[in-house]
Length: 320
Image (cartoon, rainbow, N blue to C red):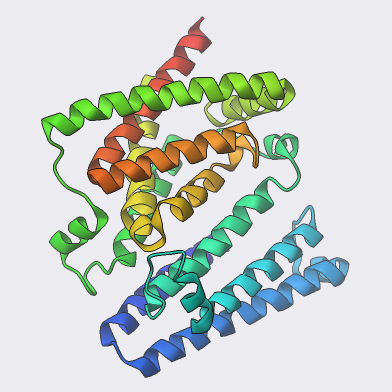
């Protein structure tokens, strides 16, 4: 199922770019209708999960712990997808986001962002303790494959081989050489992010030590057996993949604030609406500022350095 969903997303991204390249109003309207049509089955399926969950699970052999929650997720995301597929809605949102309401690529990005938020919230709907029970350690190769997928989605999203060549894609994503001055400044940003993390962590531990203990348990499960090179690979993968997707591809469309909120929500292993969320939002806003002030390459360096330092600190704590 996961592979089919991924292929569908890739197909829609390619189609959106081809429609944009045509610049024909008829194709743009047809693409909007296609998105509305794709959301209708999601809404119906969600209703069936809410009201006919027992029968549906028997027919389809669904392994769903909370069919009502999943059903509500499908309904909510389908409603979002339909609403933003109307151009009038996008014109209203244009006042808040720097995106093009006539662009099928930007429309698809808006629809998928709603799906992403809904899925992330669904994962923590049962609480962090429930999330911890269903987690296993993360194979580093699988994590790197996911980050590579982020890069591919970002490159396809900005029209690689369809609307832009390689050089234009790098320019659009903000991938540029890092100067010596930028590298030195990056060290200062890394230290600032670590300070924010330390202050936020101490505040969180003072407010809700039990929740912090659960998050630490989740981290131990996810990164069990990690050594230095595991943390190095994780930091490099997250720095490259997440920054190219969020800061490189999405930020120029949605702005710093919306992209930063998406970034914070994506880290569901730390819970939702707690001090960790505020820390992640602060980190994302700073990385967004770095992207705007310099480029995505500097944001990648800062993100990599920050994650690597935290990984080394985790190793030292474990060794101690």
